[in-house]
Image (cartoon, rainbow, N blue to C red):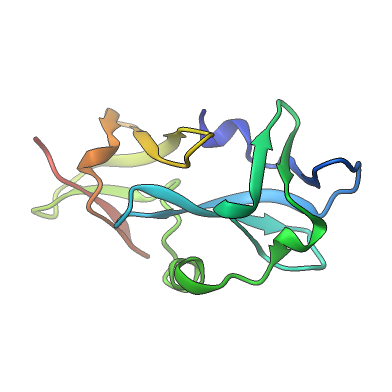
Amino acid sequence: MLFSHILHHQVVPTGTHDTVGYVDGLLVDPSTGKVAALRIGQSLRGDTVHWKDVEGFSPYAVAVVSADAARPAEGRAAELLAGDHQIMGKRLLTAAGDQIGRVTDVEFDPSTGRITRLLTTDGPIRADYLPAAGAYATVQRRA
C-alpha cells in the first residue's frame, strides 16, 4: 500500500461512522523499518494514532480501535514527531552526503506496517537501504 493512498483519509473507530481526524502524515521509525504512527489532523483528541491502534484500511478510511486512538504521541512516536522524521518530500542523500533526489511516496505492508520501498525522484529504493531519517533529509545506503 502507498502512503499517498491513505493521505487525507478519515480516521474512523471500528463499528462507527464517527470521524476522529484525517491522516496528514506518516511517522516511520528507521531503526525498525516500520510505521510507528499516523499523524492526524483536524482532531480534537490528539495528533497521533499509534500503529498498534490501527485496525485496517479501506479505500476511503483508516479504521482504528476506538475514538481514543487519536491522542498525543507517546514513546518512540513522540520522539519521531519531535525530531521531524517525516520522510515524504525530504531530500534523499547517500551516506556520503550526496543528494540523489527526494522521497515522493512510501510503500508499506498494511498488515505489519513494515516499509517495503521508498519511491523517489531517482526511482524506487528498497526499504532495507533506509538507515536514517531526520529533519533535513533521509539517508540511503546503496548496496
